[in-house]
Length: 102
Image 1 (tube, rainbow, N blue to C red):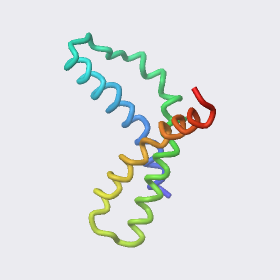
Image 2: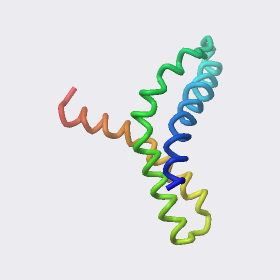
Image 3: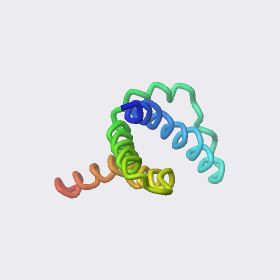
């Protein structure tokens, strides 16, 4: 049970920090654009939890299943599954657009 709470509490804000405060800043720097770092982006945290909670819980379930089976390289497999499942919200939106048209 602790595993699910830890994943649910840490994964969405960690994904936000990596996406907005690391990767976006590097992309802007490489493109020669000004930095978009803003502490006011923290106000997006409730939305981030809405979008990231289901993928985080799915990754926690996957990690739990691997731990019960005592699989070697559990951390690497969980990280790969987390990377793949992080596209779930995007895939839902793409499929919704394909179903309803442009």
